[in-house]
Image (cartoon, rainbow over all chains, first blue to last red; front, top):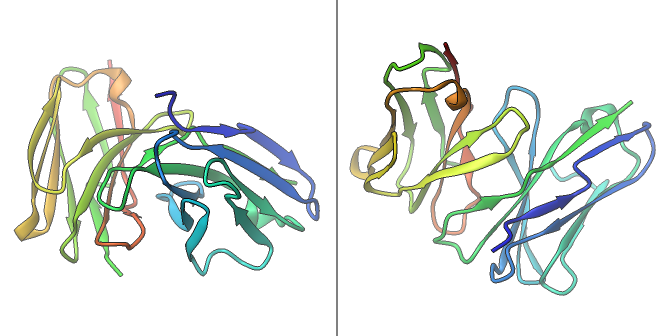
Length: 113
Length: 108
């Protein structure tokens, strides 16, 4: 069990650019979650997958955001035309099922200048 | 949706002191987790405790599901315990909902 990994750990981009983050969950976990955390707040849910199916999306996930999990293993989160308000920590988590605890990755810290 | 309230929002302790952090939630849950977020942002899972009591070293947690609260106890606090402690809950297929956290500072 190597835990949940995320790449990159830090990303600085200019407003208007597109960015993509990757998450590799624990291998036997079929559920994968994306969260966003801004300074001084708790993480907020964005979306989750069961295997390759995206089952729920938060209203926080605007049209500029898209997430995929093409083979039910790793996932990517893309933000198009980044805005300064997108600056946050993006956290990925995985779990074996609904009733199990979530294990979080180290996060990707995005700064939009 | 489920509301999660944590108290106190901030706590300063002298090294060696004990503390109790509280998490209240507004509806029945089937999952409750306590996390410690370190200065680098990593969320470390402390306890998965939808009900009952668990202990891990100097930390223990109790969830009274029927009264919709959970407590995290930290004994003999150390400076490395500093950080933000989050309680998070969910019910059924709903997403995990986090409280705003308790920011703990342990001073030597």
